Image (cartoon, rainbow, N blue to C red; front, side):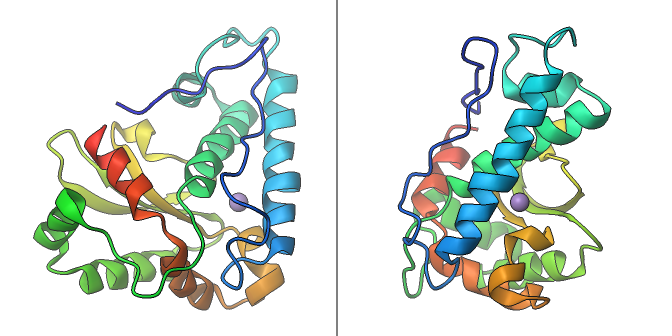
Length: 204
Ligand code: MN
């Protein structure tokens, strides 16, 4: 089961990054990270906190707000959950970065090989029209699947456990890669913290 994110004194907090602003370079620049975390994610947090009073959803975990909210509240809550999962799955670049252990076995069983998985994931990211997120999730039986989710959607809305995600909103890459979304997604494999992803798989 995913660890839930609770509000503190009725408000959700901007997650703290588990690395420095320059740690993900050259894959993600400090400038992109600063805007993405400090401006975009902060705005989603501020918007949700402003909308919570009187909504009937006060005091719920973020994950439960995503399951119960609608409209703008759902969009802001979904974006916070998505970005929390996204920013916490990275680390400094590693050459030949790859999963190990039971998650690696599950990826090979489901997709044939890690290379075939990366190819299918990248294809899903490149072909997602407009803004959204690409996900690797596990279902209740532990089977893995790749999905494209539009806008702020999260696989928990379909009963799945989210493991890994790539943000394909332009704000995630435009400063560094301009319109070259596939190049950005290809580079992200270097900074995936597979220990974090594997822990999500084990705790699902
Ligand atoms: Mn984003």
